[in-house]
Amino acid sequence: MDLSKETVKDSVNLLEVNNLNIRFYSNGREMKAVNGVSFDIKKGETFGFVGESGCGKSTTSRAIIRLLAENARVPDGEILYNGTDILKLSQEKLRKIRGKEIGMIFQEPMTALNPVLTIKKQMYEQFLGTGMTAKEKEEKAVEMLRLVGIPSPEKRLKEYIHQFSGGMRQRAMIAITLAANPKLLIADEPTTALDVTIQDQIIKLINKIKKQMGMSVLLITHDLGVVSQMCDRVAVMYAGYFVETADTLTLFSKPRHPYTKGLIDALPSTEKKNSSLMPIKGTTPSLSELPDGCPFGPRCPYCQEKCTLELPEMAEVEPGHMVRCHFSDKLIGASGLISIEDGEKQ
Ligand SMILES: Nc1ncnc2c1ncn2[C@@H]1O[C@H](COP(=O)(O)OP(=O)(O)OP(=O)(O)O)[C@@H](O)[C@H]1O
Ligand code: SF4
Ligand SMILES: [Mg+2]
Image (cartoon, rainbow, N blue to C red; front, side):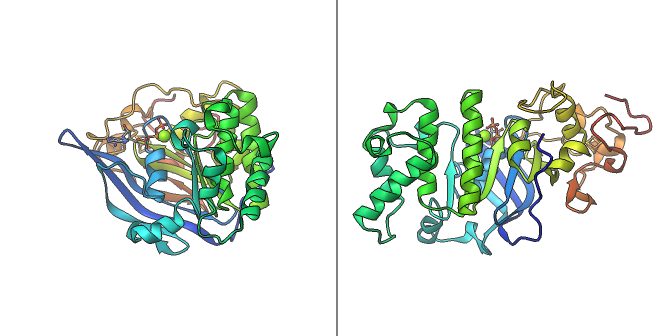
């Protein structure tokens, strides 16, 4: 784990999400996919979402650029980008922000890039409305491909995405996304589909570009190793809820939620590095039938009667460290310092 990373402090919020709730409706059922999520991302900061499949990471991040599925509704919440609520923007104003101010890279570049347009054409779309001359566009496009490490960029610009290998496609998508100079980059599992060496290159690349361009990043991942290499702060999600948020070092060294603790304890290596989330006993609850009390209750080894009756609120356990657990004051440390009267130890 990279313990040397400094937390970005006292910086201005670029993004502020307050009490975001997202519902999906299908087959007459309501699914509570995102529940009361609040967080902020400061300028120049990398904020991570981590959690098991289906916990709402992509849904939350897609809401930020209003790319939700047709059957989604947002009954509550605000998403303030530089103080303006994205949920209330007209389509015209939204177009000015999406892709330009806020860029998004996806796990699978083939679904995000257009197979019938050259890389150059797709890159040039990012320059629309900038007033750049043809020469400036060409120079910038070449520079972006070079920045992401694509060899012979002048030649590669004229090619189509199917002519690129997996790692190169991911790099091309990053180059196209970053060509617009976004202030916020949302990276949804940008490395999951890639082999470990290329994963490492892409992580270093995003970190490098982030520093060069002074960008903020929202990183979504299953991989706690990637979190430790990239994130300043992290939110752990479970069943559509944030259950713990902290700076990365605190989260790894002093997790206070049993779910976070379970994820960290389940990591196979002592280094806790390069390790994907391991399954914790039990399954996540159905989003259409969430329990009344704590959503993690059915899987929690420390579950008490109160947990089955009352949903715990997110509460600050120390400055900047929030936990959603009735007994978070008793759950300290990554190595088993847990004791709740009558609670069974993991
Ligand atoms: N259009 C939809 N209609 C109904 N349910 C949906 C829809 N899109 C997503 N969901 C459900 O919402 C929940 C959250 O999905 P989301 O894609 O945000 O999860 P995730 O945390 O990104 O998971 P993964 O790690 O697998 O990408 C899941 O249970 C998913 O099945
Ligand atoms: S509130 Fe109770 S069930 Fe939920 S995580 Fe805390 S101890 Fe476990
Ligand atoms: Mg996802």
